[in-house]
Image 1 (cartoon, helix red, strand yellow):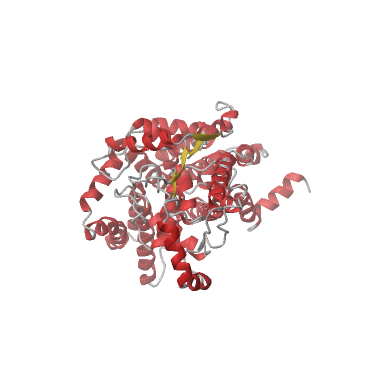
Image 2 (image 1 turned 90 degrees about the vertical axis):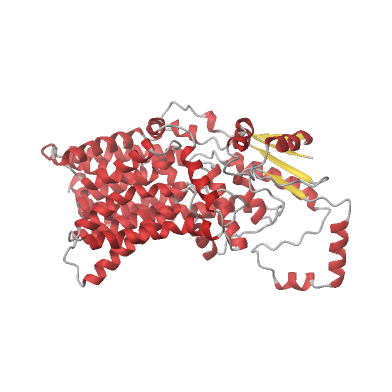
Amino acid sequence: MSFLDKMTLFYNNKFHMVILILLVTSFIHLWNPTGFPNVHVDEGTYMFRAMHLLSTGNIDWNASFYDHPYFGPILLAGMLYVINFPAIITSEIQNDSPIYSSYFIPRIIIGIFAILDTILIYAITKIRYGRNAAIISALLFSVMPFTWGLRRIYLESLLYPLLLSSILIVLYLNSCKSLKPKKISRLLILFSGVLLGLAIFTKAPAVTMIPLLAFYSYKYNRKIIHVVLFLVPVIIVPFLWPFDAMLKGEFQQWVLGLTSQIDRQNDSIVDSLYDIFLIDPIILSLGLIGTAFAIIKRDFFIVFGIIPFIAFFSFFISYLNWFYFIPIFGFLCISSGVLLEWIIKHLQRYGVATVLIPSIVIALGILSTYVLISTDIASFQFVAMSYINTILEKDSKNHTVIENNSGAQSSKYNELIQDNDFQKEAKHIEGSENSKSIVIIASPIYSWIYKFVYLYEDTFYSYTDNTEIKNGSKIILVLDRYFRDYLANNLESRNKSWNENLGTSDKLYKVIGELNSSKYFTGTSRNFDFYQYPYTSMRFNLGGSPIEIRSN
């Protein structure tokens, strides 16, 4: 038996290719989670909000404006609660392991989400286009460089399994229209609407998937009742966001927060597509060609999956980052898979070409992505935190600190605080003129770790905080690129109408001027050639470098 025959037998086996896809995507998304990519400021923001919810039980995460719905942090907090995070890691500043574990564990969770996404992409494509297209699409989704965006703790990463599950349910109903009893089909359509509603409740642009799912809800038995059943939860679930604001008497703030998101200015959709081209030119080119192919063939699944999303950001939203495209990444992979399968069918006469074409594309994707995920470009961020720990460790030698890592007081802690001698000593220390509270001012990348893992209560949520600092306080300031951009752009004056509690640049400059010692930490991303593929992704992995740490 020739090698080609063996490969054919392996490919035709019912389970072998599925197992291969799972192994590949597990490696891509679980390998080296704290080395690549480096930590983005949005990841710190959502981790802070999730940890705030775990710690306080409410969603007022120290921000008066409404930037995004809050199911994303709720979902993230729920998963962290299940695994008893952060109690499963130590809170000792002498030990650097909590620094790495703080991001290692959440990113592993996000990696598992990406593996689930891959399974859903395979199932969706198999129902809609067959097994061959499903295998190619799932492998492209697993290995192409754009998939590294799913390794970060973005809202898009959190909502994607919800969105794909909603799509899968509706497609499944369309593939078995004789499903009985009818109550089951209606419950499934209702559940699909709930899932999409939760996806929108995570991040609003998921509304662009309503045309696709409403169309296929109607296509199933062509009854308006199914569309209504689908749309009711799609409308009600996200409405919980403004409804909560009305109950709090903050509806005006909600409106201002929503309009501020719409009015923000950033890259155009052309700029963002160019960024994606730099990250992954193969999947973008194949995906767009596949979309054009779908328009010609009137394939409404791909057309409704991609076109409304692009139209939404072309005409309604002026603020766009490349990772906002994650919700249509699966559709780009599916359109690419369908296109490659069509090419293969028309080249069957050439035998080996039918195997070589997808194999070359997938092999190139694996190699490119492996080169990226094997780097360690995020280490400077963790080294910077280790340096902060050395400052805190020196200060802690003069004080006895009783820490409660899980947020719930232990029995020994309860016994101690009830002791009269201890209470007297605590009051003496608190009232002492020589005692200094430690104030940590940093971007959310670092702040949530020191507030919720190391339990430094005077840690600012972000550099946008408008919190007064007591005279004589010990201050540690982490000045990264995100912080410097904030100071340079003076965002608080431009956005004061929708967030009056933002910190002022004057206050921050005063704090910075009083700090006379500093240390720099520079990332290695710039050591790579930004114009050499696949290292073009490194321009989106600067991580706020350089980081300057100041203290008094």
